[in-house]
Length: 280
Image (cartoon, rainbow, N blue to C red; front, side):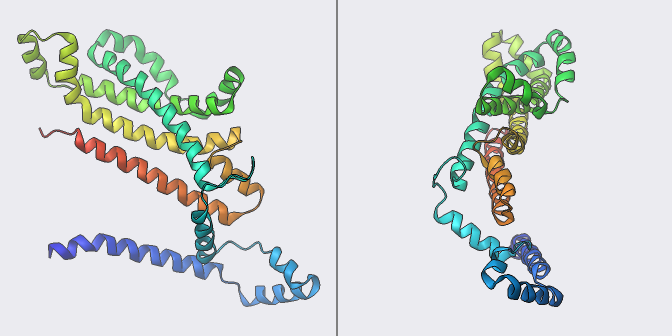
């Protein structure tokens, strides 16, 4: 019974995937009327021209062929507007990781300070409540104007969107540490620095890691939109450029790549969260 239940979820996932692909394939099959129109069009302009003018939504087979094409040569670079998906993903990941780690360097110490000091919390809370709801992309024009560099501006936007979940979760985790643990540390005359690293940090680590996991998901979402705005390189720019080329198959391939990379990033943080989660 245990073995059957263990395989039930993967089997259901495969079944749903096959069902989705079947519906997709059926939806992209040409109707009888469309076949007649295509035949007449081919007679007028020639079969080669008719093939070149295909505008139907790609089928699963079309996407599979395009994915194989990208997998065979993911890191080619033939100029500014012709780079492989692997190259574009590498640019996006570099920006995300740079902004994300800069945000962690700021959010975790400041979150500690807010969580440990009610006075600091009351002083900074109005600023946090005003700045937190602002869309990260709203900062892009200001970043471009002041920083004069599209890549650095994208990193700044990732820094902004990654900052708040880490900051708030860190402050909440630190403020939620059990009073009895702090009282024991006080009784033993543990210094502030040692108390922060030996008592508060281990207790707050799961909450901090949850904030970091939320932040990496948001950062990966935002980078696609940011790169569509600034252009140049990155998977977001690749999607927008392929839209300008009317290559729906490449767009679908990029969307799948974005989803898979996002899943990998989330699972990495999820595993790290489990490592720092201690039993009560």
